[in-house]
Amino acid sequence: MSTPQGSPQFTPGPHGWTAVDGPSNEKVWAAAAYSDTTLVTRIGPVHADHAETGQPVTGHPTSSSTLPSLVVTMLRHGRLTPGVRLLDLATGSGYSATLTCQRLGDDLVTTLDVDPYLTQAAAERLDRIGWHPVVVTADAGDDDLPGTFDRIVSMVSMPRIPATWLTALTPGGRLVTTIAGTGLIVTADKTEDGGATGRVEWDRGSFMATRAGDDYPPALNEVFAKAVGQDGEEVTLSSFPVLDVMQAWEVYSMLSLTTPGIEHRTGTDDDGNRLTWMLHTDGSWARACTRPGEHTATVHQSGPRRLYDDLENIRCQWLERGELPVYGARVTITPDGETTLSRDGWSVTL
Image (cartoon, rainbow, N blue to C red; front, side, top):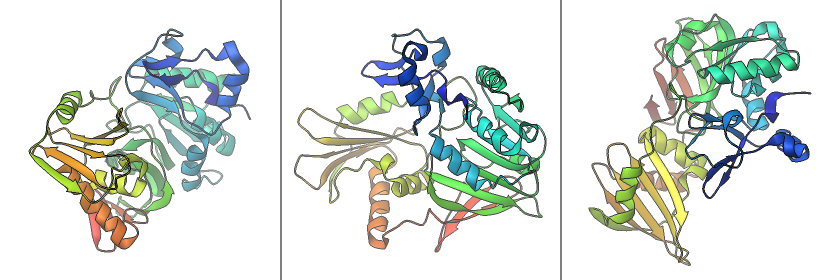
Protein backbone atom coordinates (compact mmCIF):
# COMPACT_ATOMS: atom_id res chain seq x y z
CA MET A 1 0.00 0.00 0.00
CA SER A 2 1.36 3.41 -0.93
CA THR A 3 0.95 6.16 1.70
CA PRO A 4 2.35 9.66 2.36
CA GLN A 5 4.25 8.41 5.46
CA GLY A 6 7.45 8.98 3.47
CA SER A 7 7.25 12.77 3.39
CA PRO A 8 10.48 14.73 4.17
CA GLN A 9 11.38 14.85 7.86
CA PHE A 10 13.62 16.30 10.56
CA THR A 11 16.06 14.41 12.76
CA PRO A 12 17.17 15.75 16.18
CA GLY A 13 20.75 16.68 17.00
CA PRO A 14 22.79 18.62 19.57
CA HIS A 15 22.26 21.93 17.75
CA GLY A 16 18.61 21.53 16.74
CA TRP A 17 16.68 19.65 14.08
CA THR A 18 18.13 18.89 10.65
CA ALA A 19 16.09 18.17 7.53
CA VAL A 20 16.76 14.81 5.88
CA ASP A 21 17.31 14.74 2.12
CA GLY A 22 15.32 11.58 1.48
CA PRO A 23 16.12 10.99 -2.22
CA SER A 24 19.86 11.10 -1.47
CA ASN A 25 19.53 7.78 0.40
CA GLU A 26 16.31 6.15 -0.70
CA LYS A 27 16.96 2.91 1.23
CA VAL A 28 17.21 4.74 4.57
CA TRP A 29 14.27 6.97 3.62
CA ALA A 30 12.07 3.99 2.79
CA ALA A 31 13.06 2.26 6.04
CA ALA A 32 11.94 5.33 8.00
CA ALA A 33 8.73 5.61 6.00
CA TYR A 34 7.72 2.02 6.77
CA SER A 35 8.83 1.98 10.41
CA ASP A 36 6.47 2.28 13.35
CA THR A 37 7.78 5.62 14.51
CA THR A 38 6.77 9.27 14.41
CA LEU A 39 8.45 11.30 11.67
CA VAL A 40 8.74 14.99 12.55
CA THR A 41 7.95 17.08 9.46
CA ARG A 42 7.74 20.64 10.83
CA ILE A 43 9.70 22.60 13.45
CA GLY A 44 8.10 25.87 14.54
CA PRO A 45 6.95 27.51 11.29
CA VAL A 46 9.50 25.64 9.12
CA HIS A 47 8.41 22.56 7.15
CA ALA A 48 11.04 20.03 6.15
CA ASP A 49 10.11 20.67 2.51
CA HIS A 50 11.42 24.23 2.90
CA ALA A 51 14.38 23.71 5.23
CA GLU A 52 17.94 23.98 3.96
CA THR A 53 19.62 20.59 4.04
CA GLY A 54 22.30 20.35 6.74
CA GLN A 55 21.27 23.58 8.50
CA PRO A 56 19.81 22.97 11.99
CA VAL A 57 16.42 24.48 12.85
CA THR A 58 15.56 25.20 16.48
CA GLY A 59 12.13 25.07 18.06
CA HIS A 60 9.39 22.63 18.95
CA PRO A 61 7.83 20.11 16.55
CA THR A 62 4.57 21.48 15.14
CA SER A 63 3.61 18.72 12.70
CA SER A 64 4.51 15.11 12.10
CA SER A 65 3.55 11.86 10.46
CA THR A 66 2.50 9.98 13.59
CA LEU A 67 3.64 6.43 14.28
CA PRO A 68 1.35 4.15 12.26
CA SER A 69 0.32 1.93 15.17
CA LEU A 70 -1.18 4.90 17.04
CA VAL A 71 -2.99 6.12 13.92
CA VAL A 72 -4.48 2.65 13.47
CA THR A 73 -5.44 2.55 17.16
CA MET A 74 -7.34 5.85 16.82
CA LEU A 75 -9.12 4.65 13.67
CA ARG A 76 -9.99 1.34 15.32
CA HIS A 77 -11.64 3.21 18.18
CA GLY A 78 -13.56 5.18 15.54
CA ARG A 79 -15.32 1.98 14.40
CA LEU A 80 -15.09 2.79 10.71
CA THR A 81 -17.82 0.53 9.39
CA PRO A 82 -18.65 0.66 5.67
CA GLY A 83 -20.75 3.66 4.65
CA VAL A 84 -19.92 6.03 7.50
CA ARG A 85 -18.90 9.61 6.70
CA LEU A 86 -15.60 10.46 8.39
CA LEU A 87 -13.88 13.69 9.36
CA ASP A 88 -10.12 13.09 9.76
CA LEU A 89 -8.82 15.97 11.89
CA ALA A 90 -5.18 17.11 11.56
CA THR A 91 -4.25 16.09 8.02
CA GLY A 92 -0.51 16.39 8.61
CA SER A 93 1.31 14.37 5.96
CA GLY A 94 -1.96 12.82 4.79
CA TYR A 95 -1.14 9.38 6.21
CA SER A 96 -4.34 8.90 8.21
CA ALA A 97 -6.44 10.23 5.33
CA THR A 98 -4.87 7.60 3.07
CA LEU A 99 -5.75 4.78 5.43
CA THR A 100 -9.33 5.97 5.77
CA CYS A 101 -9.72 6.33 2.01
CA GLN A 102 -8.53 2.73 1.71
CA ARG A 103 -11.11 1.69 4.30
CA LEU A 104 -14.16 3.77 3.33
CA GLY A 105 -13.55 5.18 -0.14
CA ASP A 106 -12.48 8.77 -0.68
CA ASP A 107 -16.05 10.00 -1.32
CA LEU A 108 -16.81 9.45 2.40
CA VAL A 109 -13.63 11.07 3.78
CA THR A 110 -13.00 14.72 4.65
CA THR A 111 -9.61 15.68 6.08
CA LEU A 112 -8.87 19.01 7.77
CA ASP A 113 -5.82 20.90 9.03
CA VAL A 114 -5.17 24.44 10.25
CA ASP A 115 -2.06 24.81 8.06
CA PRO A 116 -2.67 25.68 4.39
CA TYR A 117 0.68 24.29 3.27
CA LEU A 118 0.02 20.95 4.96
CA THR A 119 -3.39 20.56 3.33
CA GLN A 120 -2.02 21.55 -0.09
CA ALA A 121 0.95 19.18 0.13
CA ALA A 122 -1.17 16.32 1.46
CA ALA A 123 -3.76 16.78 -1.28
CA GLU A 124 -1.00 16.58 -3.90
CA ARG A 125 0.45 13.42 -2.34
CA LEU A 126 -2.99 11.82 -2.11
CA ASP A 127 -3.67 12.70 -5.74
CA ARG A 128 -0.43 11.01 -6.82
CA ILE A 129 -1.58 7.72 -5.30
CA GLY A 130 -5.12 7.99 -6.61
CA TRP A 131 -7.14 9.31 -3.65
CA HIS A 132 -9.26 12.47 -3.70
CA PRO A 133 -10.98 13.10 -0.35
CA VAL A 134 -12.34 16.53 0.51
CA VAL A 135 -9.37 18.50 1.91
CA VAL A 136 -10.17 21.55 4.07
CA THR A 137 -8.03 24.24 5.70
CA ALA A 138 -9.68 25.39 8.95
CA ASP A 139 -9.19 25.63 12.71
CA ALA A 140 -10.98 22.63 14.21
CA GLY A 141 -10.95 24.27 17.63
CA ASP A 142 -12.73 27.49 16.64
CA ASP A 143 -14.29 27.18 13.20
CA ASP A 144 -17.50 25.38 12.25
CA LEU A 145 -16.76 21.99 10.77
CA PRO A 146 -17.35 21.52 7.02
CA GLY A 147 -20.48 19.33 7.04
CA THR A 148 -22.00 16.56 9.15
CA PHE A 149 -20.24 13.31 9.92
CA ASP A 150 -20.88 9.89 11.43
CA ARG A 151 -17.33 9.76 12.79
CA ILE A 152 -14.83 12.41 13.88
CA VAL A 153 -11.33 11.09 14.59
CA SER A 154 -8.74 13.63 15.71
CA MET A 155 -4.98 13.19 15.26
CA VAL A 156 -4.37 16.34 17.31
CA SER A 157 -4.85 16.76 21.08
CA MET A 158 -7.60 19.06 22.31
CA PRO A 159 -7.87 20.86 25.67
CA ARG A 160 -11.62 20.10 25.63
CA ILE A 161 -14.23 18.94 23.14
CA PRO A 162 -15.44 21.87 20.99
CA ALA A 163 -19.22 22.29 20.81
CA THR A 164 -18.86 22.51 17.01
CA TRP A 165 -17.78 18.86 16.94
CA LEU A 166 -21.02 17.80 18.61
CA THR A 167 -23.03 19.95 16.22
CA ALA A 168 -21.33 18.29 13.26
CA LEU A 169 -21.91 14.74 14.53
CA THR A 170 -24.97 12.89 13.28
CA PRO A 171 -27.30 11.30 15.90
CA GLY A 172 -25.43 8.36 17.40
CA GLY A 173 -22.21 9.54 15.76
CA ARG A 174 -18.87 8.84 17.40
CA LEU A 175 -15.86 11.03 18.19
CA VAL A 176 -12.32 9.98 19.09
CA THR A 177 -9.63 12.33 20.35
CA THR A 178 -6.81 12.71 22.83
CA ILE A 179 -6.79 15.30 25.62
CA ALA A 180 -3.98 17.87 25.47
CA GLY A 181 -1.27 17.41 28.08
CA THR A 182 -2.25 13.79 28.77
CA GLY A 183 -1.91 10.30 27.35
CA LEU A 184 -5.68 9.79 27.34
CA ILE A 185 -7.73 8.61 24.36
CA VAL A 186 -11.39 9.64 24.70
CA THR A 187 -14.20 7.98 22.77
CA ALA A 188 -17.81 9.21 22.98
CA ASP A 189 -21.08 8.64 21.16
CA LYS A 190 -23.58 11.45 20.57
CA THR A 191 -26.67 11.37 22.79
CA GLU A 192 -30.22 12.57 22.11
CA ASP A 193 -29.68 15.84 24.03
CA GLY A 194 -26.84 16.85 21.69
CA GLY A 195 -24.07 15.90 24.11
CA ALA A 196 -22.08 12.67 24.18
CA THR A 197 -21.07 9.90 26.57
CA GLY A 198 -18.20 7.46 26.48
CA ARG A 199 -15.00 6.61 28.30
CA VAL A 200 -11.27 7.02 28.50
CA GLU A 201 -9.85 4.01 26.69
CA TRP A 202 -7.19 1.80 28.28
CA ASP A 203 -4.84 2.40 25.34
CA ARG A 204 -2.25 5.13 25.76
CA GLY A 205 -1.91 7.82 23.13
CA SER A 206 -0.70 11.38 22.73
CA PHE A 207 -0.50 13.85 19.86
CA MET A 208 0.77 17.39 19.42
CA ALA A 209 -1.65 19.93 20.87
CA THR A 210 -3.90 21.95 18.62
CA ARG A 211 -2.52 25.32 17.53
CA ALA A 212 -4.14 28.37 15.96
CA GLY A 213 -1.03 29.96 14.37
CA ASP A 214 2.28 28.93 12.84
CA ASP A 215 3.84 27.97 16.17
CA TYR A 216 3.09 27.23 19.81
CA PRO A 217 3.53 29.87 22.54
CA PRO A 218 7.19 30.29 23.56
CA ALA A 219 8.62 27.92 26.14
CA LEU A 220 8.93 29.06 29.75
CA ASN A 221 12.64 29.83 29.48
CA GLU A 222 12.56 32.75 31.94
CA VAL A 223 10.90 30.57 34.57
CA PHE A 224 13.40 27.81 33.79
CA ALA A 225 16.32 30.19 34.38
CA LYS A 226 14.99 30.84 37.89
CA ALA A 227 14.49 27.13 38.52
CA VAL A 228 18.10 26.44 37.53
CA GLY A 229 19.77 29.31 39.36
CA GLN A 230 17.78 29.89 42.56
CA ASP A 231 17.41 27.97 45.82
CA GLY A 232 13.65 28.55 46.05
CA GLU A 233 11.39 29.57 48.89
CA GLU A 234 11.06 26.02 50.18
CA VAL A 235 13.55 23.15 50.26
CA THR A 236 12.40 19.65 51.24
CA LEU A 237 13.50 16.02 50.96
CA SER A 238 11.23 13.69 48.99
CA SER A 239 11.11 10.01 49.88
CA PHE A 240 10.81 9.24 46.15
CA PRO A 241 13.58 9.52 43.54
CA VAL A 242 13.26 11.84 40.55
CA LEU A 243 10.64 10.63 38.06
CA ASP A 244 10.52 11.37 34.34
CA VAL A 245 6.86 12.35 34.61
CA MET A 246 6.09 12.40 30.90
CA GLN A 247 7.12 8.75 30.61
CA ALA A 248 4.76 7.72 33.44
CA TRP A 249 1.49 7.94 31.53
CA GLU A 250 -0.93 7.66 34.46
CA VAL A 251 0.93 10.14 36.65
CA TYR A 252 1.46 12.58 33.79
CA SER A 253 -2.19 12.47 32.77
CA MET A 254 -3.50 12.86 36.33
CA LEU A 255 -1.15 15.75 37.06
CA SER A 256 -2.08 17.54 33.82
CA LEU A 257 -5.78 17.24 34.64
CA THR A 258 -5.47 18.46 38.23
CA THR A 259 -2.74 21.08 37.68
CA PRO A 260 -2.88 22.01 33.97
CA GLY A 261 -0.22 24.10 32.28
CA ILE A 262 2.96 22.47 33.64
CA GLU A 263 6.04 22.30 31.41
CA HIS A 264 8.41 19.42 32.29
CA ARG A 265 12.13 19.23 31.66
CA THR A 266 14.59 16.51 32.68
CA GLY A 267 18.32 15.97 32.50
CA THR A 268 21.50 14.51 34.01
CA ASP A 269 24.42 16.70 35.08
CA ASP A 270 28.16 16.01 34.82
CA ASP A 271 28.16 14.30 38.24
CA GLY A 272 25.45 11.85 37.22
CA ASN A 273 22.72 13.54 39.25
CA ARG A 274 19.22 13.03 37.84
CA LEU A 275 17.35 16.32 37.59
CA THR A 276 13.81 17.35 36.83
CA TRP A 277 12.17 20.76 36.57
CA MET A 278 8.48 21.66 36.66
CA LEU A 279 7.52 25.10 35.31
CA HIS A 280 4.18 26.91 35.24
CA THR A 281 2.85 29.94 33.39
CA ASP A 282 2.03 31.65 36.71
CA GLY A 283 5.76 31.72 37.57
CA SER A 284 5.78 28.71 39.87
CA TRP A 285 8.63 26.26 39.55
CA ALA A 286 10.10 23.17 41.18
CA ARG A 287 13.49 21.49 40.84
CA ALA A 288 14.36 18.04 42.15
CA CYS A 289 17.68 16.19 42.21
CA THR A 290 18.50 12.53 42.93
CA ARG A 291 22.19 11.74 43.39
CA PRO A 292 23.75 8.51 42.09
CA GLY A 293 22.96 5.55 44.36
CA GLU A 294 20.28 7.43 46.30
CA HIS A 295 16.53 6.85 46.30
CA THR A 296 15.36 10.23 47.57
CA ALA A 297 15.27 13.67 45.99
CA THR A 298 16.13 17.15 47.20
CA VAL A 299 13.32 19.47 46.12
CA HIS A 300 13.38 23.26 45.67
CA GLN A 301 10.10 25.10 45.03
CA SER A 302 8.98 28.68 44.53
CA GLY A 303 5.98 30.69 43.35
CA PRO A 304 2.26 30.70 44.13
CA ARG A 305 1.91 26.93 43.60
CA ARG A 306 3.84 24.04 45.08
CA LEU A 307 4.04 22.00 41.90
CA TYR A 308 6.12 19.19 43.35
CA ASP A 309 3.65 18.72 46.20
CA ASP A 310 0.92 18.13 43.61
CA LEU A 311 3.12 15.51 41.97
CA GLU A 312 3.96 13.84 45.30
CA ASN A 313 0.28 13.53 46.24
CA ILE A 314 -0.45 11.80 42.94
CA ARG A 315 2.52 9.44 43.31
CA CYS A 316 1.27 8.47 46.77
CA GLN A 317 -2.18 7.66 45.38
CA TRP A 318 -0.55 5.69 42.58
CA LEU A 319 1.48 3.55 45.00
CA GLU A 320 -1.33 3.07 47.54
CA ARG A 321 -3.95 1.96 45.00
CA GLY A 322 -1.78 0.41 42.31
CA GLU A 323 -3.43 2.66 39.72
CA LEU A 324 -4.96 6.08 39.18
CA PRO A 325 -8.58 6.61 38.10
CA VAL A 326 -7.86 8.37 34.80
CA TYR A 327 -7.81 5.31 32.51
CA GLY A 328 -11.21 3.67 32.21
CA ALA A 329 -12.95 6.84 33.45
CA ARG A 330 -16.49 7.61 32.30
CA VAL A 331 -16.72 10.59 29.94
CA THR A 332 -19.75 12.89 29.87
CA ILE A 333 -19.87 15.79 27.41
CA THR A 334 -22.57 18.46 27.48
CA PRO A 335 -23.86 19.99 24.22
CA ASP A 336 -21.61 23.03 24.78
CA GLY A 337 -18.52 20.82 25.10
CA GLU A 338 -18.03 20.77 28.88
CA THR A 339 -16.26 17.45 29.44
CA THR A 340 -16.26 15.55 32.74
CA LEU A 341 -14.15 12.49 33.52
CA SER A 342 -15.19 10.39 36.54
CA ARG A 343 -14.30 7.07 38.14
CA ASP A 344 -14.46 5.60 41.65
CA GLY A 345 -15.54 8.85 43.32
CA TRP A 346 -12.98 10.98 41.47
CA SER A 347 -13.96 13.50 38.81
CA VAL A 348 -12.56 16.44 36.90
CA THR A 349 -14.25 18.82 34.47
CA LEU A 350 -12.33 20.32 31.56
